[in-house]
Image 1 (spheres, rainbow, N blue to C red):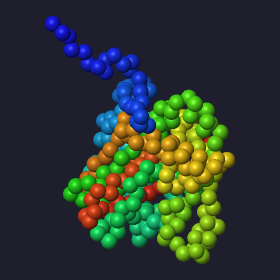
Image 2: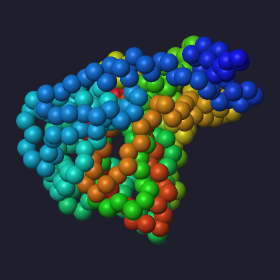
Image 3: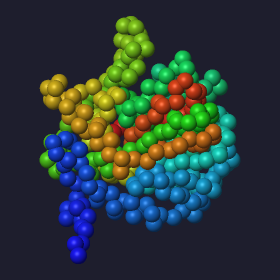
Image 4: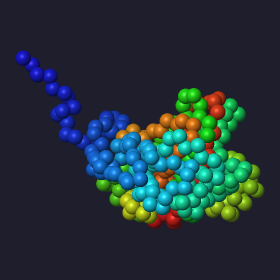
Length: 314
């Protein structure tokens, strides 16, 4: 009697290239330790359900519309660092409550390009409908073109389309750890230029662009950033805002930005959140990139975000 053998069983548990393409298949083994660490975490003030292998936790037992004790805020900060992005359901915050909650984690920034909620300048408002398309469907972190980018962001869903409009998040620690050793050596000491004009330049005339570049000149940050609180390393470039890598030719720079950015395409590094009215996402902007799916046009989607000022990337 012939015994059928799974052809995958003869391959060691490692990633292999699917020739002749730049596609890797096989178990993503470097996620195992972090996946199990998250699975065993516990918090006193609330419960968390793990969403992705190494990223994303859905928190229950916290009411963001009420005054939250300092001890629970400290635990939420630790939970954010652990899970990189955490989610809350059924949180009908007013704009004032949104600001109060976000400010518990640090000073808030005001975005120079995205319109704000009229009553709270610290809240940026993403209001999409038939005449206003969603162009955030590219992997990115927020404001890397600032000298001091955001540490974190709190996004509140106000109106959600019947279908679509999810947001995906990618663990940027995992993208770096998954690189081969040769690539890690190559990018170790590289820096990259980040420029708001790649995404927002089309909204300004020549005079306006020059004025905004005076206020927000292109920044030079490390290609491999070290997180200021966890000490972990991560890829810190993206196609939306990184214009070039210092010291490389234009073609070399474009190829490397594209290759490093493509690591976010690995589904095992991601989690995906399906919004409901008054859901909230709270992400560590240093540790993750995000991608807002633009699959709901011409339906209406309205979100508001408060961003917490971070530290100079190292």
